[in-house]
Length: 108
View (cartoon, rainbow, N blue to C red):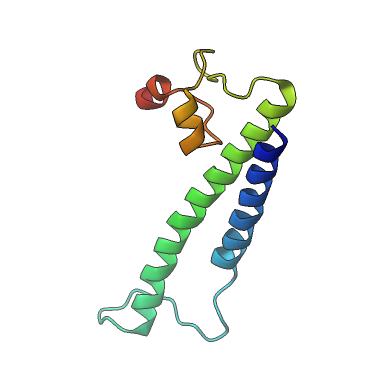
């Protein structure tokens, strides 16, 4: 479990750096607007919208990692939060921060 914990902590640190980069304020003088013509301002605005979606996804991933770390600490890692059944080894190998089994995750 120690190596898994460290892997999750390392991944969280990477994601936090990326999130910081994505959420940094625009450079001074960067125009962000949706005008009638496609130009630098429009391009910057569209890029910021995409960046916002990516930042939200990274935030969710960090939350998932935090949840997995809590589950390691309380001895429930590998158990589904929704149904209490075991989360498959293959799923945990692919998504170490998974908190729900495939069946519960598919239900939403």
